[in-house]
Amino acid sequence: MSIPTSTPLDGASDICRMTAAQLTARYADGSLSPVEAARACLDRARVVDATCNAFTRIDDDAALAAAAASEARWRAGAPLGAIDGVPTTIKDIVWVKDWEVRYGTTSVPGITASEDAPAVGLLRNAGAVILGLTTTPEFGWKAITDSKLTGITRNPWNTERTPGGSSGGAAAAAAAGAGVLHLGTDGGGSIRIPAAFSGITGIKPTFGRVPAFPASPFGTVAHLGPMTRTVADTALMLDAMTGRDLRDWFQNPLPFNPACPLTARPLAGLRVGVWDTPPKGTVATDVAQRFAEAVDKLANAGALPTRIALPGEDLWDLFNVHWYSGAAARLAAVPQDRHGDIEPGLREVAAEGARYSGTDLIRAGIKRALFGAAFDRLFEQFDIIVSPAAAITGFTAGLEVPEGSGLGRWTEWAGFSYPINLAQAPACVVPCGFGGDAMPVGLQLIGKRGDDAGVLAVALAFEQLG
Image 1 (tube, rainbow, N blue to C red):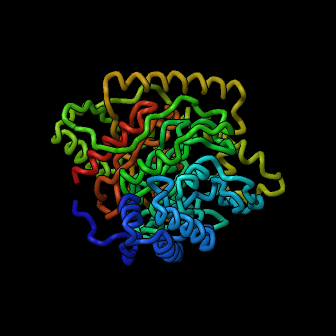
Image 2: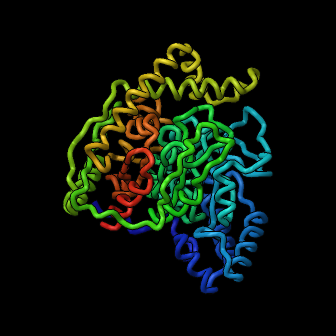
Image 3: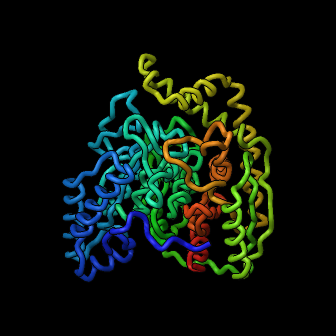
């Protein structure tokens, strides 16, 4: 399958296509200023927003002030770290101090954040230049990105298609060069699905590596993580976002090994579990072909692939208990007289979630624990597990499921993502070619809990195979 020769929304400047390391090298030698980079990416953000509807806020004043402070640090030879001065976006479901967070909804007023969310604070402390906020579906409930508040977000590879979701604005911005580092969230695939649909890289880290506050109503399936154009940038951003924060009681207090300096893991002898059958639905033929080619690449480099099935039964139903209950909790926080403003699909999911009893939730928690423990044991046999990132490519924008598919909910085509949320394991998506519709296909690499650095080292090795 030939790769399209054009890049998403052609016309981005060279500055907007640079990696974090390329930018900071130029900052260090004085040949480029963080202010110049911020201006270029702000201009690019407006172009991308006009075409793809990727942003809910672009803040020139805040970004340029942060860039000017970064420029002064670089001139003094005292940058805060490896991402100082790097243009960054935040999903409009995560708090940024003094900015209004809208959650993609018209049902409740926006909240002016009284403080940075922990991940935002960590990025800011590392010198990231925050350009603005990216789009999300209502309360981040589904794996595509559209809402009454902001309309339909579109894929820069083909604006008739969805970039996925719920971090779809971040994916579109990343793919089209409107910033280098992008903060997304992932409760059932919301980083990895848009990464796959948009031809970028993203990681759902081990649960608790990146602290979260306020707590998600979707509970302990919800993660925060980076979305970028390269594995190296993903690793840099992940390290910047890693830290203990006492506002997050769910966070594991144990330290995590840094991902940087990042080096590719040798693939010779790598024990690879090949997971190719989702809990629900089927895999599109062209996606299956790209996945098989990716596995062949690994094998030709010396890896040892073995086909596996995931442990556990009824993972689709198990995830739905957790996710739909979270949707019910989210809807319960909206005044009853505003429920009519909520998207019908979210109301339907929430109504189903409200029917679960406390006993149902406890039983689901026990089943999840059994699945998670069995999943952990897979890594006694394998160094990494690979799968398609999604069973399909990006389909018509504005739809929850592909037209004519006969599917009811997004979870029916997202079966390669939500089991890993249940397991709380790290999973990175990297591009692995294009489908027959010339839309990107992603490869998912999954590791044992805590081994985010190992997952990224294998992802880098695959990326370098070309």
